Image (cartoon, rainbow, N blue to C red; front, side, top):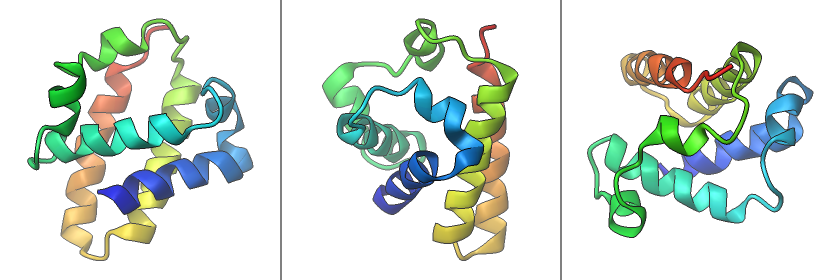
Amino acid sequence: MRRLAETFYDIMATDPKAAELLAIHPQPMDSIRQRFFEFLSGWLGGPGLFEQKYGHPMLRARHMPFPVTQTLRDQWMYCMEEALNREVKHPPLKKSLLNAFSPLATHMINQ
């Protein structure tokens, strides 16, 4: 999960296809990378690291201060799909994760 979180943000930070998404993230992204790793840990069945520090994720509420559009959702999914392609070598697991992330990303749209 750590590598997936790091790769996701590395892609966001360097790929022009994610420029709008990168622009809404405060820099540097060290703490965001850590929180994303902690979230992924619990969301995917491991230790609830995020919940232990911050309480329930309440993802949509936490993202409300940011204008999340369909374009930003698509850029987020682009970064995640690229990260999954790089970090997950088992095709059925990769497909399952992609299918789980897609509705989560769509749920964040608030514009």
